[in-house]
Length: 148
Image 1 (cartoon, one colour):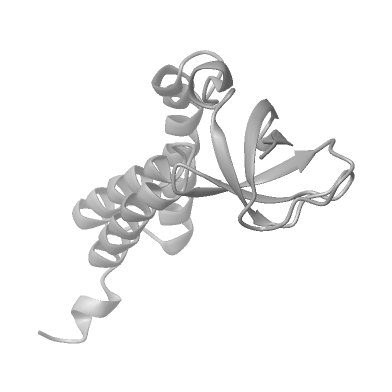
Image 2: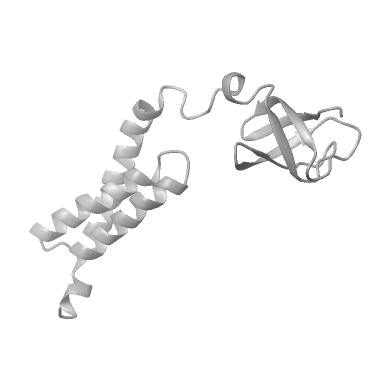
């Protein structure tokens, strides 16, 4: 394998696309997949045509953003991705991971994942305490202490 392989834009764009597609599995929101596909489109076009770096970047950005704008809403539904709090969260039990008190958000663990959380309770809720999820605002869960 010669050094020309490492300076050839086709495998570079392919590798960038692969990394972005793999990263999509760890990042919520279905965004990186479009940039991964854009990188692969750029890889294919740079294989067949001798494109300047500027043209490669333009192709990457245009295909990525066009795919993102045209398909993301269709994939996630008209409202975008937001889990239904009434079905999956409301009334369920979580465990305090970082201290919670009124006006100072902390974190709770629910179904193995850490969530930012707030409480209206007057007492400080310490780690290990069980709480009930009573609502959600954006990505913040609202919780109340479960009385022992």
